[in-house]
Length: 203
Image (tube, rainbow, N blue to C red; front, side, top):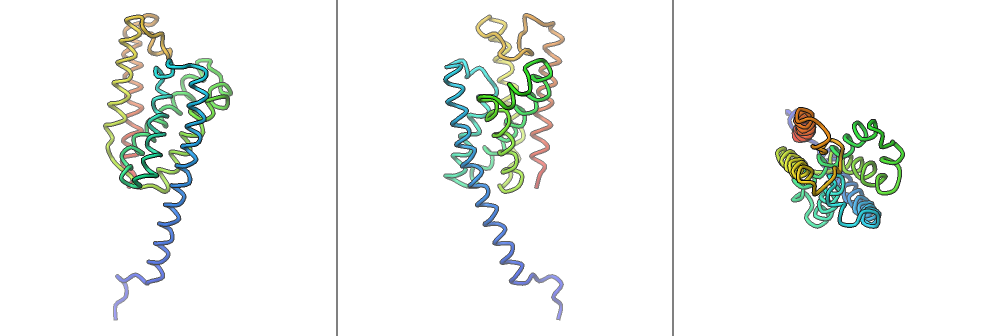
């Protein structure tokens, strides 16, 4: 009798247990993310008021908050939003660590202090871990790219009109050359595209 293509009941049980454990971990981490996001929201609101709406960091974390709430309510039906949120938070983490900190913002200030601890460090890391290890995956790679590109264009326009100053150095269109602006936008769009495609390729 040929048993090579058959799986034992014990393997099915083990697989079922792993699935339940993964779901439990995802629920637990998304619950923690919600709490941390709310703490960050309070800290940001106290410091910046309505001006926080200018920041990619705030917007990406707001989407992450909504995605985690939806995940708890709808489970894997929220995979597309959890995917988008994880891409945006990864972008936030990388831009902060690799661009803003070297520009002089300070590692401790940006990554370990006040809302930065939650918005720049803890929430991006937890979101990535939960999505990569314990959640169902989606492949709507264009969503984070479109969001980031539209955000960048809006900020450039508001800076050009003098309505907003920054809030990031690479959006200060009147203080840099046109070439610098084009290079920054191309680089930032390229980074979010790579992040989105990388996460979309995960089975």
